Amino acid sequence: MSNFIREKIPEETAWYTERMDMESAEIRIVRSRRRTLSVQVSESGEVTVRAPYYCSREEIRRFLTEYDGWIEKHRRKALLRRAEEQCHPLEIFSQDEIEDMGDRALQVLPPLVRQYAEQIGVTYGRITIRRQKTLWGSCSAAGNLNFNCLLMEVPDEVRDYVVVHELCHRKEMNHSARFWAEVEKVLPDYRVRRKWLKTNGSTLIRRLPVR
Image (cartoon, rainbow, N blue to C red; front, side):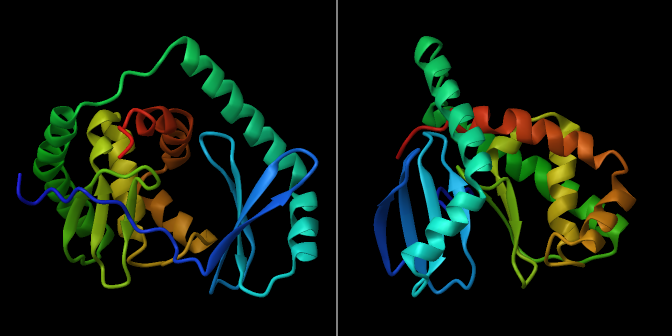
């Protein structure tokens, strides 16, 4: 399976990482050349803020206070999920199973991309299959497409949604209203498909072995 690239999308390069204690949790701060603040809650419940180099800790604290409800909601879900998995551990995919998914993806996804690209009216570049813990697919400015091998474990209609989503970025490299309008032209029920991925996708991702 020579075309199956086993690698992760590299994380955003950080100048340095620091910690901040809040009332509800310890916060990991990753500083980089970015211009805006963002926050994410990991599968383990860890809270990470991505911030510009020179953003003050007081600005970060105000930002976190503004999103306190959202953070607590997602931390609670992550911690409940961890507790459930300790009682009912997930079956981790073996390396053979991952390679099989990669092989199948190389057979299934290129024809699917070609079909939808013609329907949408766009071109594309290289197609790469990866095992990823953060993304289901991506589209570069040059039109190169990356897809997660785990797409072989989702329903056909959800797989179609991910392909259409990435191809529509060939028209709109953002998630604006115009972008979603392009997706809806092809898949009027895309919200249902996206909801399945949001509800069930993380369980599949957690079945990937830790490297």
